[in-house]
Length: 372
Image (cartoon, rainbow, N blue to C red; front, side, top):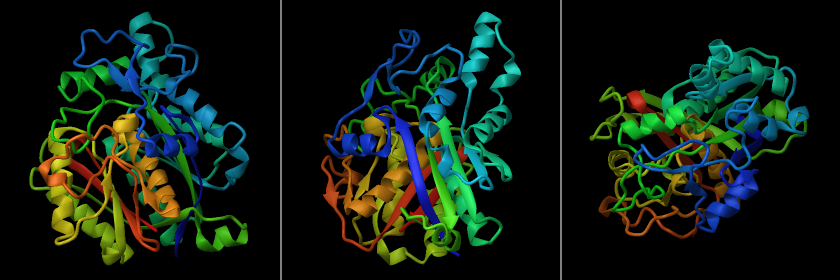
């Protein structure tokens, strides 16, 4: 049974809507800027991908502010019987920050289970709900779970929602790991030095082909295959041999049957030296003798953590529809391993192909999705 994406939207540092992100990335623009919502002088970097107009320290958490904008006027598109899968790494961590710093509020309000309750109320999705928090693979793992529920016939409608925000706690953690670049992130560049933290919220509404046809819903594409693994290499560092990601990609290709029709790869591409090298090693191992178009969105919007996979899935579906993949923003001199694979310009792709989307996260977790 096919798992079809029938609706999708997002909010990123480029603003609300898929069109804003698509046009910004396609034009090679960078939405990473100076962070002003908290003091960054003690940190490695002062840059981040910030959604404009959010109130840090206000009534609602940052992620709920993004989600309210995202679903304003669009909740009616979500069937009441839809199952909900929420993906996030830190959720409403700014509520806990506020309690610790000011003594105001209840720290229990910051737990992810409470955020799940809020998203159920906001979206009206009253089917069984599930929370996925798997580091920076959270939302791609959630997409895989949604597709598996539909393929096995356990559900015919699943709403996947993802969100994460840039807070002082999150920023200080990545700074302490020395993972931040002092300049906007440069994925796959020879001189890359780290990532830029970003924030986003996004959703996908996934239906069985039978239900989508019955309700006369258009399709943005199909979640055709998925794979997950954990290389158990290090708490934060990926396997130098790319073993875990290779395994996840092969699982995704095997479950989709699309090994020979992959036309491009939407990579995790954080801009950290080891992640980018690990991914390129995996791509070369899985597709020997081929050079596929590869891009990363993170030079344009930063690393949106638990929301990254969902944002990248939406853009990969758009790329399939447009017959074009976006550039890797901020790419100047490709790393030797990346030569021929990445570009600082948009590239046309052949019609009728499929897309591979990859993500990796702390703890060695890896995910791969095949879209068509």
